[in-house]
Amino acid sequence: MKIGCPKEIKPQEFRVGMTPNAAQEAVARGHEVIIETGAGLGSGFDNDAYVAAGARIVDTAEEVFATADMIVKVKEPQAIERKMLRAGQLLFTYLHLAPDPEQTHDLLASGCTAIAYETVTDSNGGLPLLAPMSEVAGRLAPQVGSWTLQKANGGRGVLMGGVPGVGPAKVVVIGGGVVGTHAAQVAAGMGADVTVLDRSLPRLRYLDDVFGGRFKNQYSTAGATAELIQSADMVIGAVLIPGAAAPKLITREQLSTMKPGAVLVDVAIDQGGCFETSKATTHADPIYEVDGIMHYCVANMPGAVARTSTIALGNATMPFMLALADKGWKQACQDDHHLLAGLNVHAGQLTYYAVGKALGIDVVSPAMVVKA
Image (cartoon, rainbow, N blue to C red):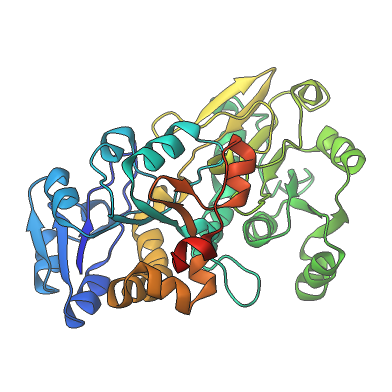
């Protein structure tokens, strides 16, 4: 199979869809790897590293899309990239379609087959291709939130760990999954007073058993959230419904109950955000203010630590990428129902229920598509 990896063009996105190690593995199996020149520079991989791995370097993204049977990326294809997709071509990347009707309709019109990293599952009920970026984003959230909390950036001017005689920042993490757990660990490590909210009692028991007194946890209800945000210096939104739009957990009206200069960090912004006032931002202009509350809503947070993120993502995606290349997408999905869960679009048909529900589009069963 011809596997193509273009340079990411989303603003301030420095990750790359394929590492030289992944390219080497693919080439060793008899596949051809085509890399756009400079695609890996943001992550510290130059063209020579890919050439040494056996890949071929081309000058433009157009050449990659025109030549490759499978396109491997990091972020969802941008409008100019979607025009280069063609019927029968396989796209393997993050998609986050539920809050993005324009991308969804473009992918359907292209006739391509699109498998989304964020909806591939595993035997433990997890999302193995989303998990490494969730870990990165979770660990980054208190870091970028503490920067936003500084007075010069519009925040309350509160130090996360406080100092002797002055209490620490109060941090509320909504969601106790991968993002929330890592966010709570780092925020507590910075000395903050941290409370994690979640609706799963087994998850809360797990957090209590594993982390003990490092941070508190509480069952998540609308009332509990409303009460906690009143005293919070920072709220980290870390909720996820796989493939679906994130629920809105803090309304604009509730901002008036928060402390002026408090910070909202929305890690769910890729799925539309979990605060009513969230809108996607970039690393170039990451924060904005609404009703005195600072918002950090960068849609590709892990791109800030591109090398760590690229290697972590590559470790997770490579086995699936190789299976798709070795077997073709249909056979690979037939052999692995967890990979089949990643199928979102095929030949003008939507194949993921949560996206169809969010956008009002009819959905075809992915199992039926694979058998066709």
